[in-house]
Image 1 (cartoon, rainbow, N blue to C red):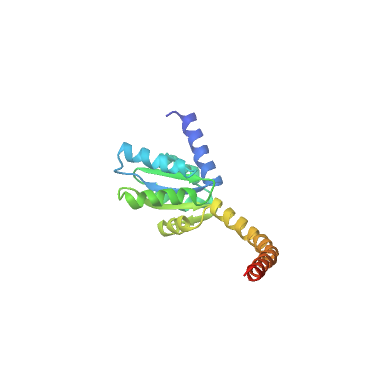
Image 2: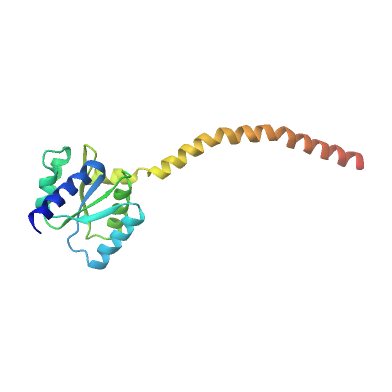
Length: 170
């Protein structure tokens, strides 16, 4: 890797930490197939992952709010990131549950630095889509209640008329 490639990589890593929720993972011991499986799970969740050179990552986050994470960049490390704050954390936690070789080291979400427990707490939160679905359900619930309340008297009247008709026929 020449100087221009290193400079581009430092700029890219800095941009990832500025714009996304990032999870730092130790990927030592993962086989190629396990690593590709993790990438697939991240891709399905709307997240990405990249193995980074520790030295370049430390340079990229120097002077930024996420600078405290520089101590995590030792040994084989990778970063998982997503625009949705919980997508990367959920996918990594799910994969780590089934694979002991993967270790969550920490992460960052904006200016907030997260340790392993913080990343797990982030993973437990609902995703953006789940929150939107909840909001839509909350908004639609009163409208559905009004529609059923309006329709209920008509159904009650129909039931009463049917009962009266049955009595008169008997």
